[in-house]
Image 1 (spheres, one colour):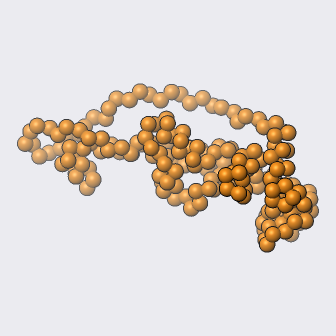
Image 2: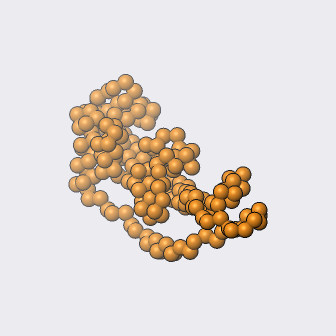
Length: 186
């Protein structure tokens, strides 16, 4: 139906191109959106990514998750043919320059002091650094949900669970701190 209407209006509709993007440590929907908007010269909004991937919480994506990114959803105007022929003709897509080959980039290794500093900063903001701090269902130095700690509130378990949580959700303590600064929680 859209193609029929578009052909009648002198519009060429190009099928949407899509890329599959694998979420990396430190990624956010905002930086993925900005990267694709710059790379494709199309506005690839956070809302478009959320909608295309049926994401329930736009603040929550996971390392290794694969996202579909619609890279070309533009409808381009063309000049209608100067004939009385009512059948529409296919319009060839404009030639494009091939994208440069993607280079594999190893994630930058965080220094231990950067990681320790960000971890200590979060602990101070969350609990003042106390393993015994509580706030409703959140417990300990990193204010983790009691369900994450499985009843073991020892310092060693809090450290282990916090490291696993931050690694799986943010990829690093620095990324978790960055998220905290933007949102007031991690």
